[in-house]
Image (cartoon, rainbow, N blue to C red; front, side, top):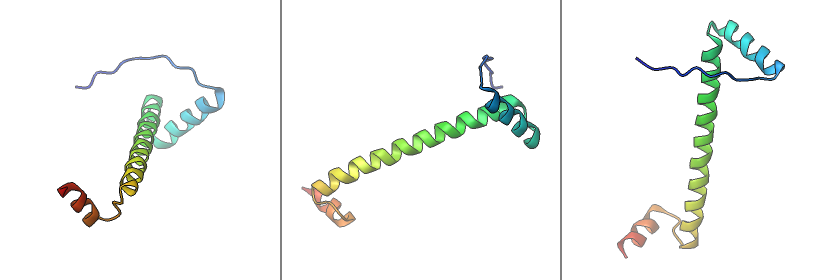
Length: 78
């Protein structure tokens, strides 16, 4: 069984209203809507981190002349 930690948060009135409306529309609790939003934010943050890492390593590979899988295989055999 999952353990929940109760927290009190403050939201600006417009976000509070939007979250409550969404909860009613989706038949969820307010907590579930906030949890979904936080999970989505975490997912987006992780995607951005992965894209940033891919960009970094792609740049490093290009600097070494590694443009294809064959180039990579050759580089790794050295």
